[in-house]
Length: 92
Image (cartoon, rainbow, N blue to C red; front, side, top):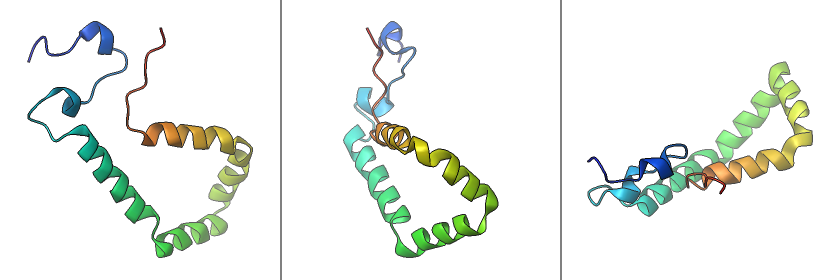
């Protein structure tokens, strides 16, 4: 498959195979399947309650929570960027 992508353009940021190969599952389908999986897995009431209780019982988790609470805006921005599933655009 040599010459399919421009190595100079994508060397640093990468490229998803499903975006360049006509034989791969479409990128949008993979993105939707991944999002749906995480949504159904992490938004289960039992799972959420279990993780909250584990946090209150763990000194390590409570320390991490309080250490990061002031960075909540930055953390949310990172989560939004990472869950977008798009390669980071190289700045020109």
